[in-house]
Amino acid sequence: MLKFVLPLLWVAAVGCTDPDVIRVHTQGLVAPTDVVQVVFVDPVVSQAEVGTHPEGVFAFAPPLPGSATWTSRRDLQFEPAQPMATGQAYQVGVDVGKARGARGQEPFGFHFTVEPARFRVEVGGLRSTGDARTVDGRIHTGDVAEDAAVEAMLTATQEGEARSLSWTHDRDSRTHNFTVGGITRGGTETTLLLAFEGGSIGVERTEQERVVIPDNAFTLTSVRAVPTGERTIELRFSDPLDPQQPLAERIEVRGRSDVRFDIDGSV
Image (cartoon, rainbow, N blue to C red; front, side, top):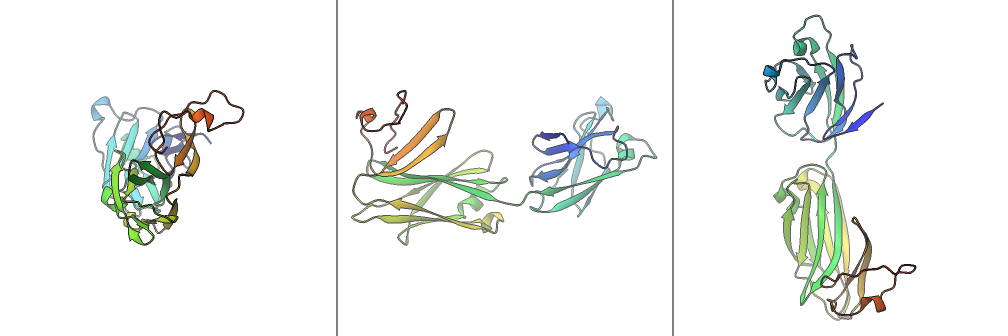
């Protein structure tokens, strides 16, 4: 079965009484804010009807308020009035005869499921710039989430004491970047606890991440591969580095002589 990965998941029409009529339709997992789409093989409406809103063509179980629109001569879309319920399965009936302005044509049905709400967390690690120490990270949500709801997910504490949080949010409302400030260091190693609670965005899941905050001694705190266009390894240290120091004399990548170093504070 041929699949197309677009804003929706489309597949070749299945269950249509006349496969020469329907080319593709929505099926599988969709996002709560997606539209429901049916594409006919041949043009169905005139160019003058593109942009109009036919009524009674779609039927949903459970009911789904919204409106249909001809977005092209072959493409009929249904836009829900509100985001669809996460995890909900919908049965869809399409009155082909009414859509084509022809009687005697049997309707056809299909189904899809709205993907469950979810989130994913990335934590970058400790960053030191002068006397300031921060930990950055991001929360990825499966679908659009309100900024305030995402911010309510996270609490940050260091040895039981709350730490400050600042946020920036990407325009897609799915990637939410945070920075934990006010982190302290002393004579002993401590732990920064990041607690994530998904209830504010409708996800019944909790997650915790722990970041070790070293004592006052200079040390390497983390190493990770960074998925960028270049092969990059990120090393984070407990204190800022001197941009003038010859790191090639102190850091070796075995088997490679073409290594370039970039310093950004303690990273």
